[in-house]
Image (cartoon, rainbow over all chains, first blue to last red; front, side, top):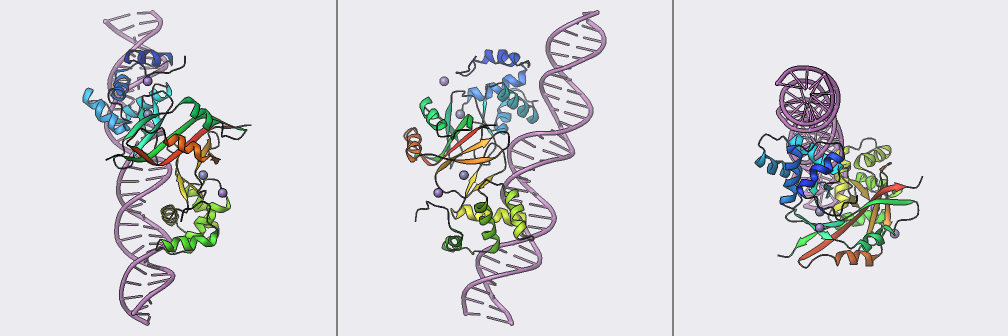
Length: 141
Length: 141
DNA sequence: AGTGAGATTTGGAATTAATCTAAAGTAGTC
DNA sequence: GACTACTTTAGATTAATTCCAAATCTCACT
Ligand SMILES: [Mn+2]
Ligand SMILES: [Mn+2]
Ligand SMILES: [Zn+2]
Ligand SMILES: [Zn+2]
């Protein structure tokens, strides 16, 4: 099964158990916190959102859940320079634009053929399993 | 002056003083350590190389010198996921390929028109000052 | 329903890369 | 030769993340 769309909330349980993992409340809350506000929150920001729904959740658990969801291909990690890792539930191949002033990060659609052209730049002997494209700049005032 | 080529070693002193900075032995050694072996070393690796030439140099100084050289546009920082920052003396616009097994990073030339096509993907209101392209994958065995 | 095995969560300690701090060293200027 | 600003240095500190070991939970099986 090739994932082409964000999981509907109820499919998360299935995707997890496909990987032999349990659909715990913590994992579902963490995943929903990414879906409901599709910015690219850091683990700390996810922690804050998750605590609103489950005040007893711990930061370690948020890190564990995020890692689990990444492993199951339900979400992606996004890094920019040395900033804290951010998390993205958009599974389409896409690029990121980061506003230098605010630090906010938005998705940029990239046509598949552009990804192909990029991969075609690699000399023989190198094969890419992924390509990351990140823009840095400013948003119109 | 638009920088299009790596500085020849003697031009570094000039570029530094243009910025009102001194061309110290530490700064020149750090810069040369990037030129002589054009992998993309981490600060720790630069430190090791620099110590071979100047056993008294400190890690803090290596960090300071690298930051200074970045500020002067003599070198670039390159990040990949959460790994330590790497440094690159290649000032041409280019992409990076990182071998997942070994962690080594090599430069990939990217034609200017591809960078242009990428920038053209941005919706109006967003303007990019830089674009980063990073491939992750494996090198033929 | 009760038990046991394994998975999961949790708080706190540990790690790592990088930055900060403040003292000591250097170099160009008067 | 003293003044000054710049630079280097060792060590302390920070920030994000990972590790750890104990507590909790879940599920399968009796
Ligand atoms: Mn979609
Ligand atoms: Mn060249
Ligand atoms: Zn995204
Ligand atoms: Zn490079």
